Image 1 (tube, rainbow, N blue to C red):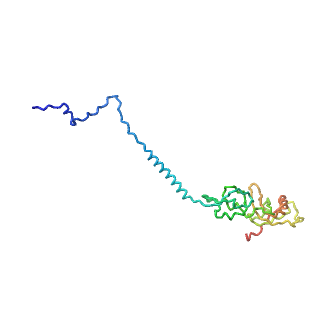
Image 2 (cartoon, rainbow, N blue to C red):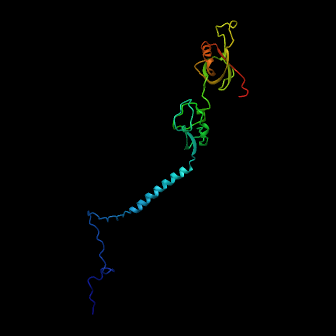
Image 3 (cartoon, rainbow, N blue to C red):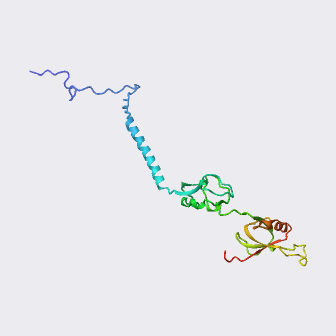
Amino acid sequence: MAKKLDPGEGQGSTGGSSPPPVAPRPGEPVSVPAPPKLRRRPVLALAGLGLVLMGALLAVWVYLSNTDSVSVVAVRDTVMRGETITAGDLMAVQVTPDPALQVVPGADLESFVGQRAARDLSAGTLLTREATAEQVVPGEGQSVVGLALTAELMPGEPLAVGDRVRVVATPGQAGDPATFEAQDTLFAAEVVGVATSLESAQTVVSVLVPEQDAAQIVQWASAGRAAVVLDSREGD
C-alpha cells in the first residue's frame, strides 16, 4: 500500500523551519537595524575625573618638593636713603633665588639692623649687601665735591673709589707761577666716584672733603685751577 506524502515534506531538509529571507524588491529601501544604546555610567565618569585631578595634584606636589627655596632678607617697610634700618624694617621670606641676585641669607637679618640705607629701599624688595652702609656718604661734617678735570690735571694712573688723593690749587693757564700763593691750597680727600664721558675730554672725579674746605675747592675747580694728586695705595 503506497504511503501518502505530507504536503510539507520534501520542501527541504529543515522541515518545520522558517522560510528563507525574501530579497528586497528593486527600489525598495533596505531597513538597517539600529545600533544598541550605550548605557551611561556616571560613577565611572566621576571616578575617572577624580583620577585626573589626583594626578594633577601629585604633579604639583612633586614640582614644589623639588624646587629649592631659601630664606632671604626682604624689606618690610620703605627705608629712605640715609635712614637707620631697624628690625621692623626687615623680614625673612622664602624664595627661589636667581643666581644673578646677590641676596642676603635670612640668618643674617640681625647684622643689618643699625646700618644705614645706601639708597632708597622700597617695601617688598629683596635686600642686597650693596644697599646698606655703616655710614652715609657724605657723613656729618663732610662734603662731596665734583671736579671736572682734564688729563693734565689728574694722575695718569686711573683713579678708583677709595683712593686717597690731595686736591691742589694751581695757577691755571693764565696764572703766573711766580706770584701764585700756594699756602693752604692743598687738602687731603678721598675718591668716592669717577665718571668719564666719550663726548668730553674731562673726567668728573667726586671727592670727599671736610665741609669747611668744600667752598674753596669748588672755586678752584670752576676756574680750572684744581688738580688731583694720587697718594700711596699701600695699606688699602
